Image 1: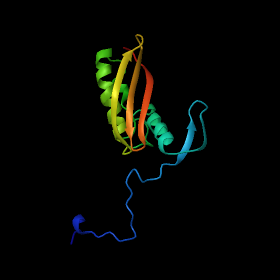
Image 2: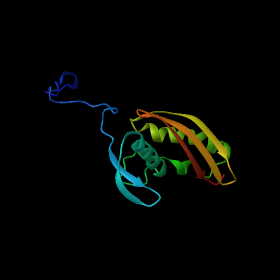
Image 3: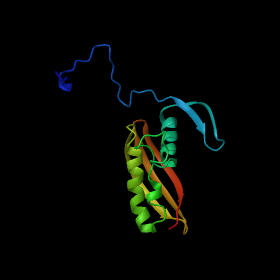
Image 4: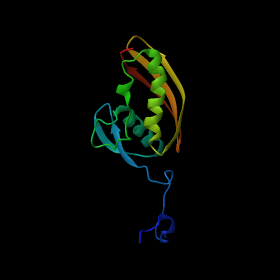
Amino acid sequence: MIPNALNVTIGEDVEVQTAAEAPTRTFKIDFDAGRVGGFCDETEAMKQAIYKILQTERFEYLIYSWNYGIELNAVVGKSFQVFASEIKRVIREALLADSRITDVTDFEVAQIDKRTVSVKFTAETIFGEIPIESEVNANV
């Protein structure tokens, strides 16, 4: 007989945690110095996670699952109009793969010069809103 998932009984000893209840304590990374030192949690850990997701090209590193990272190479080198439209989708897809991020809003994309674009947005997380601002060097 094949077990039916609808008839499975979970014992009383099993606790199911939502993303909001899961511990968030992680190592603090100093990206400027290239060092790991101390710990961070909640909002600070979330900022670090967002930074790491946006700095990791999706499908490029075997250590990460296929839904981790951003597909930035797909939009870099496009015209500014295409880049401005697609970067919103690419960022949303990358960040919403993390269950702690509930929405990505308030996008502002501005061309600084021929090769540099400023991107601002707000990541809405289970710990609150986190404003993000970054520059992307692109061949636009």
